[in-house]
Length: 87
Image (cartoon, rainbow, N blue to C red; front, side, top):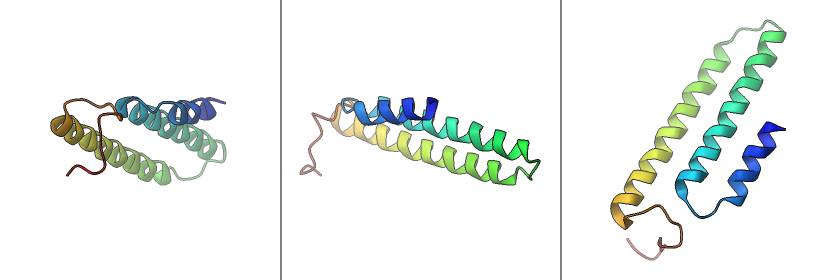
């Protein structure tokens, strides 16, 4: 249920890049906790959880770098002010 709320926010928020990135991080966090509790219930090794957390952090830092470069080049994070034709 919480996962679908995060996906709904991701699909419905098209105005700001920051809100989109935060909803992606929320979905990654919900998936992290669900995988962690699933693996703990069967007492498997938790090394996969560490790999998933590393990829989530890399995804977050990549999104933050895109946000910073967009704010530096356009002055804000609105998608309406961003044009694909500009370099």
